[in-house]
Length: 212
Image: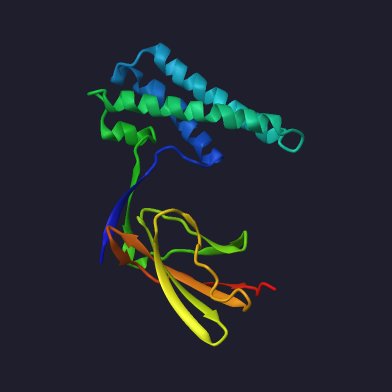
């Protein structure tokens, strides 16, 4: 059994969660100002960025049904707020007075999880793109997947396999006989450090109609 330690980003991706994270920082940064030896100006700067970001978020949500312009403004400006928070965390990490407990209290510590690879399985999605099957999957912490395909056409069956390291892949295999319908069934296992791990994925099939 293989277990993998994964650090989740301390920056919340969901807008509502990030706003809550910002409120926590706004409430607690003044408490740690003197302890960490950070100037009042720097604290005020961080707080203003967070407050402006939340105000824009709230404004966007209020008029979301009426206009998309604020959505676009938020999408453009929010990454700057995230960048400010990341840079400030770097300052804290390099501050000898700042302890892991303070980072934890400020919500700026990555969350470490342990993932048991034996329980993980890929989730495959398949679509027909320009006449060829396209496979999509999420890599997660893994290096890719080992994809297995069974091709059925008429009374004949063939199999092949591929190692995929990108999250989407278009099957380049030529049709066995373009004049016959052809069904391709796919399943996969995750690959981690060169080995197949975890459980078999869902099986997805697609039929390529005969070309007349």
